[in-house]
Image (cartoon, rainbow, N blue to C red; front, side, top):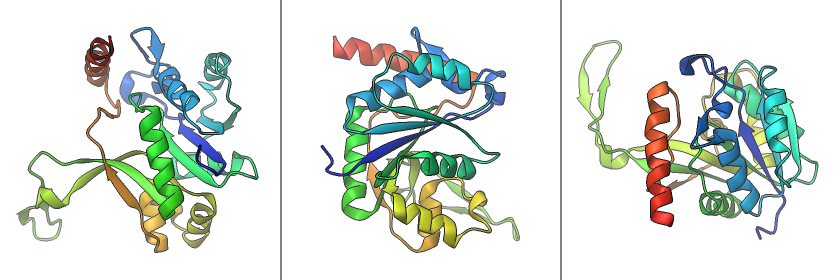
Length: 231
């Protein structure tokens, strides 16, 4: 148990335009939707409640899928940008919620362990985020001079979700950046802009985000391998 009331905010409002028009949460892999994979991990964790940020197009289908789960689940419509959608989800959480755990529904490999470790770290530090090491050589092109620089990848990492944070800290950060908060592509950037620190947790488990049709086949192969290892 975390000792604090925790709400998972699931970002599930994407249009799925890069997936051929199929809403990402409704994509099926080995007989289960991405939405069900994510809900199952949260259901197994000590997280107290769930807010699903959905779209008008997928709201009814997600509500139907959610009926087989036991934890309290609320649904709220997302905004035109991710930042707005997450804000809607946080504001829909219960009054006694102290910690928010934001997770992309397009990352179906999340586990109870990942969720709980990230939440516990946020309780200790105020904000935490799962990330992965960068293994490719990374180049930076200066837009003014066109000069290309090779960056030191040992000091770089790729930010993922879940991203967990104190609810009050997040709301203060949104207020601080009220005129520009919609420009932030994730919650870590918003919180750091506010001047608070984020604790980044490097993990090695599969936690890919499905963004294109080719990712579905890759995710299916990974799930098959995980199932084989679990037998």
